[in-house]
Image (tube, rainbow, N blue to C red):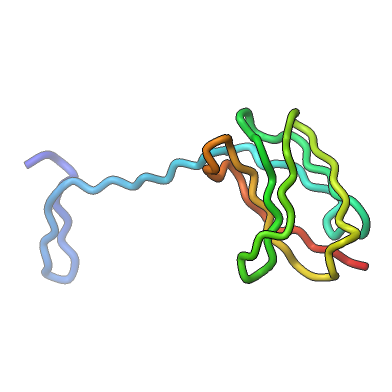
Length: 106
């Protein structure tokens, strides 16, 4: 038995190797402003490999997909009703690199 692989809690003995995989795809947060927003939104410091940004409503329905070609994106939200939305920064495979919340105020 290796040191640290056994744990006793309230008379129950747990043995084995336990690991936590808490890898974050992108540690430095994307900057979103203004948030709340009224007409347009800026996202800066997008992670390397970012190809698109998806805007979803609270039910998960896709509302907008914005193509990314640099580490900064600006897009209009005048077509979105007032409320809270989720945004997701994705790579070319559709894997999520970063996500957050966006509030629209009209």
